[in-house]
Length: 124
Image (tube, rainbow, N blue to C red):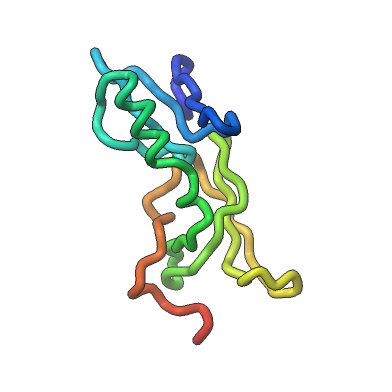
């Protein structure tokens, strides 16, 4: 959950929220849209720039959800401070079966960017 004094940071070009800035002692901390810390605490303008550079493009990448049965490739469907939803990879096929998983926010450690050594869902 975001602290009540969290300030949303929006991109200038389209006003899309790319994260929040929260107090961190005498400095400020950037929080991305998945609730993860971005960089180290710094001065306000530095944190704004860090969030701008971090952006939100990474959200479109494939992700891996560590499940009891093993790592599963997923795509982010929804993400707000109320929760995160992912679904199993369907490669854009409207009729492909997929499973939705509702996760807490901030993102749990079991949700991570996919790595080259993750199982390839094209070959089961």
